[in-house]
Image (cartoon, rainbow, N blue to C red; front, side):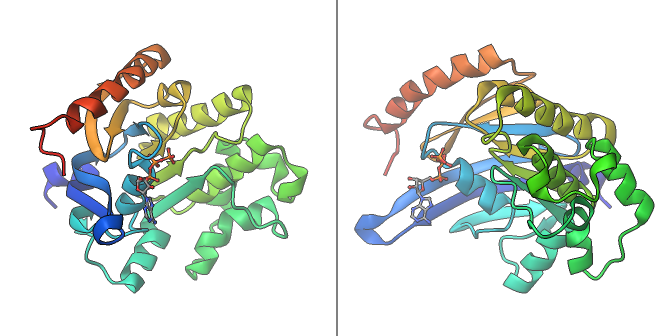
Length: 259
Ligand SMILES: Nc1ncnc2c1ncn2[C@@H]1O[C@H](COP(=O)(O)OP(=O)(O)OP(=O)(O)O)[C@@H](O)[C@H]1O
């Protein structure tokens, strides 16, 4: 395999996403080109409506771009059939959402192993135990979600995302429903899975503190990339966010090529 290209878990090339038709058209993404290297933790930030969720959905094969291409581990996913995409999402992608999306009747262990069992794979007991230990729930595998705190439930969701060794985990506001201290624990866990196991994570967030746990922050404004920060701090992210309004105005100015 070509090592240079394989260094990217996900690549987006000139991705454009237009919703609606004619006068109701909304350009949610307007020519986004970026890459997410293997073993990196990227946060995506931007004002409400700037295209963050759309970017995540297109990168994860949950939605198809109107034009442009998305590669996951060198496979072009933007033209895959729904069946191919379903398999790819099941086998190579992990998801963590703000609402933990656990099945209430299943135990922690059953929730974590569900993706494997749906794929017809018998869960390896040692692997399950290792992943549960990693998220700090080794002693709680027989509990049901309602018996756990919000932070613990999100840890179950992270374990469920990790169990199939995905190429990338997409997280959409994973700490949005958690209090500050619990949120920090969950973010530290995500960061640790990148640093110690080389997991790739792409996370949408509104919170500069959450973004500061990432290696890199990508800023979106009006469907376009509006810069990035490496080794971010909460302060540097917050500062950049306050300037994004000005960036949008600049893009909209006459002669800047906006439609
Ligand atoms: N299914 C859809 N149909 C029509 N327009 C949509 C659809 N999904 C998103 N949009 C529009 O595309 C633009 C980008 O939306 P998106 O949800 O990606 O933004 P966001 O940055 O994630 O916003 P937020 O921070 O509020 O969640 C918005 O103008 C939104 O209204």
